[in-house]
Image 1 (cartoon, one colour):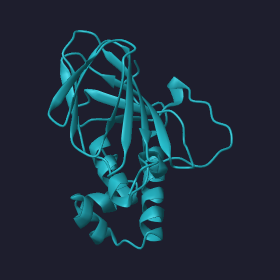
Image 2: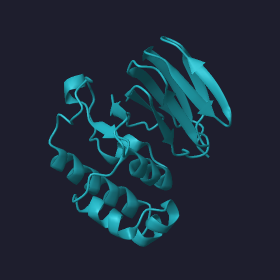
Image 3: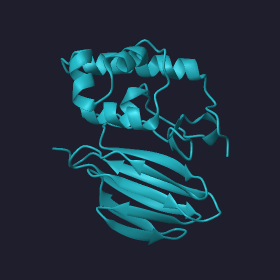
Image 4: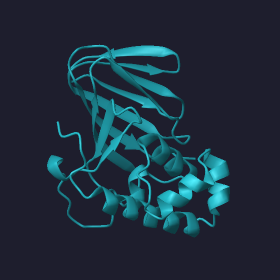
Length: 192
């Protein structure tokens, strides 16, 4: 698995910054107002908007949730036909780099997003709660996964799938020695 981002990191950071500023302005939010709403400092948001920072997956989720937009609306331009090539995918990492997701397609209708995900052996990732009404669908493509949702743990093997309301904290756990490769669909159809 390629652990770096194939595309120029600086260009991606600038694109995220431009889209963030555009969406925030369209929604009539000040930088300070958004910062207070999502618990990310105004300084950090300013650096992201200027393309001077490469935010973590957790920070991007907070921003997207605070703006009530799909995560991918922060870094993709529109196109009629799309091909998702692994070698060209944008990778988003957890701060400790044990969890990596690759966005697969830009869905301009903003009703769902598709991702490939990778959780390193003997590691875990706790996801931020998404907006109310967001639903996650996860399929284990290889390896195994324990998923904690609302205090319950679900054990998933290769090709097992799960669907759950993602508006509370949830944790992905790989207790095995093999990389867990996952496929995610995140649905925004029921956002309130």
